[in-house]
Length: 360
Image (cartoon, rainbow, N blue to C red; front, side):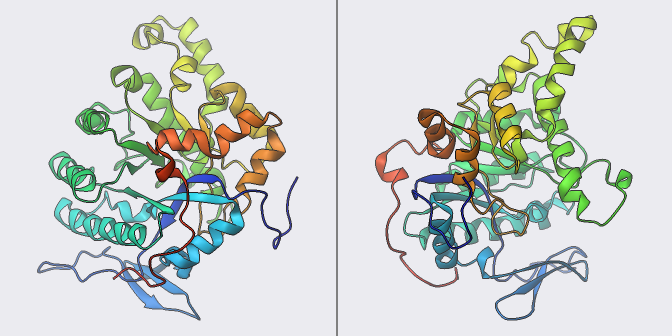
């Protein structure tokens, strides 16, 4: 049953794995020539700021993007105990020169860590690495785990056109498995944008799920989860189109011997070893994901703080799932496993913030 905008949820127990962070400011570039796409902030109206990229307004955001106190207050209204915060995908910066990207990503990771520290135990850090350079990516992964204590990382659905299942990323996934770091795959610069007819917002509505479905399929057809059975990997937007692609992939594996040889384990079986968020905006679609992927694979995703988000994620699950034990897994249990929140202290929220301020 859906709730009105000002009604409080029945519980504040959910764990959100899909929420984004944008810092209040960006640093000056430390180098001789500032990259053309180095981001900056410009003042906007009230508590809003413009994210500027390549001299244009990329996005206008509010304090919801950077303020831990505002975020935690909204989490209470959304029924959330914890929230994993990851960079706005455009900040992954795979298209930058590696050194510049490493500099920007380090700043964003440190800002996320500061927000986590100020959150009174309510936020979980999900960092980023410059995957266009494997040595720099592995070094930043070590920094995230060793210095910042992060348990999860966000990557794009493609890295300059190459999907996660591409063989050149094998060292990264091996390191994530070894270090116990969960990987959350988010849509980024979708393929097929030139096929959309209408306003640019269609990129989020239609381009993202198509892009995520192809990224997830690359993980199956490359046997990534078979090669790294300890890897915890999740896909945004309910895995995009993957739920609809799986029957075709299963049939193709029966028809084409080359596919059967390439995938010793069937794609549906592999798909149940992955995680997916519940950000599909529709109870029947969520029910389909439960049938395709299983009750242990789904977890809350809101896309906070952006306008195209699920503001009542617990209610969305309640509308689709009648079984209380399955509800509990979708609301909190699966995300706790994905993020390795394996103790009561990890999962239980603190009632107070350490600070009301903006990360320095």
